[in-house]
Structures are given as structure tokens and as C-alpha cells.
Amino acid sequence: MYFFLLNLSVLDLGSISTTVPKSMANSLWDTRDISYAGCAAQLFFCIFFVTAEFCLLTIMAYDRYVAICKPLHYGTLLGSRACVHMAAAAWGSGFLYALLHTANTFSLPLCQGNALDQFFCEIPQILKLSCSDSDSLREIGLIVVSALVASLCLLFIVLSYVQIFRAVLRIPSEQGWHKAFSTCLPHLAVVSLFVSTGTFAYLKPPSISSPILDLVLAVLYSVVPPVVNPLIYSMRNQELKETLWKLMTR
Image (cartoon, rainbow, N blue to C red; front, side, top):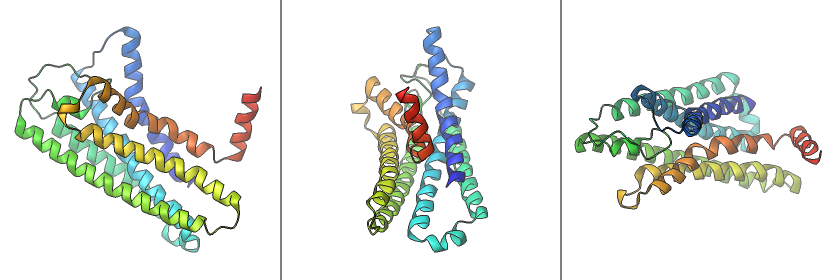
């Protein structure tokens, strides 16, 4: 579990470092400029970290399912080598997916200006600048397929947690219930928020698009999960909770 949490921490740090520092710098310097290469790099790393993180969250749901529902088979199904391979698959999937999207998006001819109504380079905002309907439809088709894959991963996560909840409810101790639900439910809520807002941001009809709505959705799927994930998993550690309580009471 801690091996996967280490990977998740690195991905969260990379994800939030891709968009927030540049946005803060622009606010401090009262500018909204970004170079073409910088925009491409920002889009690549944003998709890379977000995709790899979602793949890792799916793997972590399976890890928790095996640990709780099949504890005697855990060493066989999820040995150290299997964990390394699964984490590498998550990172590799994110890299290939980001490379495909970035290359496809920045191959579009842009003729509708160079201003994006967003605090970072986002695919839907770049597509608004495209003057090639056929190329835009190709990228939209890729987004639709990606949304379907993400929905299947979310379904897998939900089914894993359903099995976990069924196993936990058989535990006679209420303390065991609280310990499992206090982590599983917030994790499931964050994953659901991430998928629902990200899918809606990329697939919503243009008729209901607005700068404020686009900004809120972007923050919900790109900023909130990396901020909340460390809180969810850190609060499982009793020593950390006690230390935090001492700091607060001081």
C-alpha cells in the first residue's frame, strides 16, 4: 500500500505543479502569456500526471480489494514484482496517452486567435481555436473513447469497493467499520468527483459553455484531487493525527 502511496504522492505533486505555479506567477506579474512550446509542455504533463494518477487509483482499489477480501492470496497476487509492474504500467499508460493527445491537439491548424479562456492549456479551449472541423472531430472522438475507458475504470473501482464494504460489514467490531469507511468513502468520493467533472468538462455541449463554468470544472478535476488525496491517506496514520491535533491545540 505504501509503495502505491509513494507513487500517488509523486503524481499529485507533479499534477498540481504543472498548472498552479504558472497561474500564480501570471497573477503576480499581471499577465496571461505562455509560449507555444510552454503550452504544449503544460498540456502534455497535465494529461500525463492525471492519466497516470487515475490508472494508479484503479490499481490501488484492486490492491485494497485483494488485501481485505482475499488476504491469504495477497502475497501471490500482489508481490513486490507485480506491484512494480503495475505501477510502471500506470506511468507508461499516462505517458503514451499524453503523447497521443498532445501530438494530435497541436497538429490542428489554429486560426481563431491565440487566447484561451482558462488558467492553463486545456484541450477543449485549444479546440475552440481550430479551423479544421475534421481534425477537431478526430480529437473529440479520441476524447470520447478516453471518457468511456475512464468510466470503465470508475466502474471497476466502485465494484471493488462494493466487495470491500461487504467484507467489512461482516466484521463484528464497529471500530473496524469506522476505519475502513473513513478511508474508502472519501477516496471514492474524490475519484467520482475527478471522473464526473473531467468528463463533463471535455464532453459538455458548447451551448452551455461559459468561462466561469469552465474554470470551476477545471479546478475540480485538476486541483482538488491532488490537494485532497494527501489529507485522505495521511489521516489513516494515528501518529500523524495525534501530532496534528497537538499542533492545532497549541
